[in-house]
Image (tube, rainbow, N blue to C red; front, top):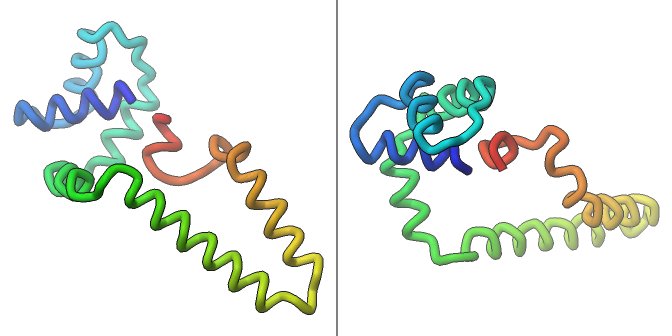
Length: 117
């Protein structure tokens, strides 16, 4: 999270978010900087308007996005189970996969959370 916070500090001060500036902020904070993480974050933020992202995040109540996303995922699972009643194995695999998602989060997921979480 320190890497994201450093990027937010740079954005707030109007300073360009690049590898050198991000590394300087992290060094000043006493963080052991990993160059690969700095490069990945700078590349990920290249086409992102941070002001819009922060405004959208502030507009969503705490847990609102996660709860609605979780509810949608559960609804899709239920639909898949209903459609796959002929094949009992398919429903069992979906349930087994659902339980194993927490363990596999760091193994190749997408997004900034996977890089810096």
